[in-house]
Length: 323
Image (cartoon, rainbow, N blue to C red; front, side, top):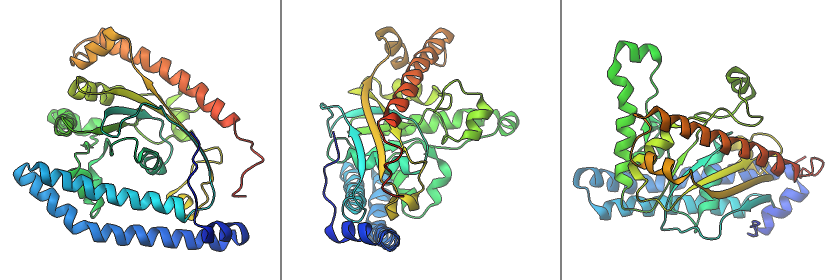
C-alpha cells in the first residue's frame, strides 16, 4: 500500500520554497519534541517498570506498553506532520493483526531502520522488540524502557573473553530465553536482524559475502526465538527495506532528507519438518537441522537480494526530490 498520510501545509510549503531552512527547522522541532516527550514519560515508565519487576504486575506491564505506544505515536506524528512530502512505498500483507504474535527478520542498514519499522507498524502490528546490545541499558529512559519491555539485551563477548571464562558463552542465550519467556502470552513482534550488524561495503568485502546487498545471515537468534516462542506465533515475517538515495542517518530522517524508501513485508516459513524441529529446540543439538536452517536462510537471502534489486529499479535515479 502507498503511504497516503497528509503533511502539515506549513512544513510542506516551507520544504518546497526554502528547503535548507525547512530542514533545520524540521530537525530542531522533531528532536526537541522527542527529547521533551522522553523526559515527560521517563518517570512514569521507570516507576511502572520497577513495579513490574518487583511484583510481576500485569497492570504495571500494560502501563509500560501504553506509555511506550504514546511515545511511538508522537514520533510517528512528527514524521507525518513535520517532514516534507515523501515517496515512501510500503507494501504490507492484508492479514496482519495488531494483537498478533510474530517473529520478524529484516536486512539492516541504518539505526533509522527501527524507526521506520515502528512507523509502518502503527495500528497493524504490536510494539516491535528486537535483539539489542546490553550497553544500551545505560541510555537514560530509552535503555530502561527497552529492558522493561523485555527486549533481549545481549552482551557480545570476544573469543578471548570466552576462552578465559567459558561460562560467558551461555549468558546471551540465557538472557534471550529470559526475554522471550516474558513475551509469552502477550502480543509481540520480535525483530531479528539476521546479519547481526549494519551493512557496509567494508563488512561485505571482509565477509566475502555471496550476496550483492546483504551480509551473511546468522541463524542462532531466530532459532532461539522459534524454540522459545514458536508454538505461540502467528507467523514469521520477512521485511525488505531499501533506501534508493543512500543509507540515511537519524539527522537525515528528522530533517526531512529521507524522501524515498521502499518497504516490503511478506509471510515466510520453512518446510513443516524443519519448522517443527526448530520449535522443539533441535537447532543446537542436531547438525542436520542446523544445516537445513542455513540452507533455508540462503534461499531467503537470494530471494531478498533479487527483491532489493527490483525495489531499487522501481525508483528513477533522476527523480530525487531532496537534491
